[in-house]
Image (cartoon, rainbow, N blue to C red; front, side, top):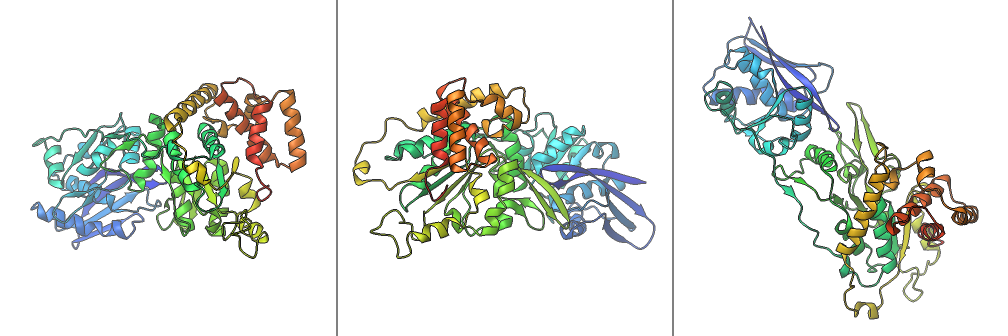
Length: 504
């Protein structure tokens, strides 16, 4: 007789159902696990043996074979401990087989039989619900998994509690979802003195999810502006919160099973590796671009990142997803994020100030900015020169308009976009529009089209640049509440596209 339990193997944010088969046969006592297990899965036999011993359950003097099916799918992670233990308990008739076969289980076993939380409980619950099964997980992972509304989630503190639950001695209550985090941002645009043009660029970028680059001298407020971007972004919708949390679950970033409605704001250091930014490593884990899904990826000192790292951003920025190919993994992660970059105009940072610039100016500015390739610069919708703030501006009182007022306009513009794209599942915001859809929603009037044609010819706009100007103009029109894209909207979009010779 073969006893069966079920668990999952992760491929990106997808969780594939794995059947855990346990067979007892005559022969020399042995305990083997087959089916492409990694080191952590192979070591499960010792943890299972010790956990059962702590419950005074002796393994039978037989040959125990655990098969993880499909056998050609790599199995990684310690979460296979609990389903292996369930299959073994079913094989020795301690647990009823029909009960464990209706459950997807994951969890790491301690040597005393307690269950240790593991990553991926949220996508595992999604997979269990899609297959019509309940989910069994450690108690600390239950609040996270319970966010899947159509899944029955049982969270147990130990293997002993699992046995008592399934034998009817002490039933466990269903898990309840964790808390929703909606704490407001501590930063406010009212803190920024001057920089009205940069604030306007932030508002446009937030309204249409456009990529943005700040270029300015040290201390001009580039990082300060970027840090206040989350304060004007609308909260995540329930669907966005679930998709973002699935990625954070795989990365082990969900605190106490709570799902946040705040948009992610990731700011990696410029020494980060390619695997840290894009994702990868031995287990093909999500990188910063995926952790910023539905939020903001802020890259300060942009030209200081390694050239190879910057070039890998080109495809994710364009497509909204990243494919990680490794020898033992081939996974895809979503990464629809807003890229905000900040850079000094040159190595010393004072190219625009002759009294403070280095001896290599102005040639050093071109050399420094050329660390960012033309194709990558072309993917920024808005490029802003951030001038130094004068002392007189610092003495001014705080602005009357703060993040709350700007956030209302951003949210109103996004509502117009959601209504516009209600019948287009591939687009949610203006940044997603392409081809015929873009031509339909952002068709400029006659004057605006003439202006765009002259600008495209004079500044040699690429086809990508031409379409990005149209998207930004459509967002500016949405902020104004206008139905059509007119000449002022297009003129402002062009002014943000070509602010300086250094970035033209």
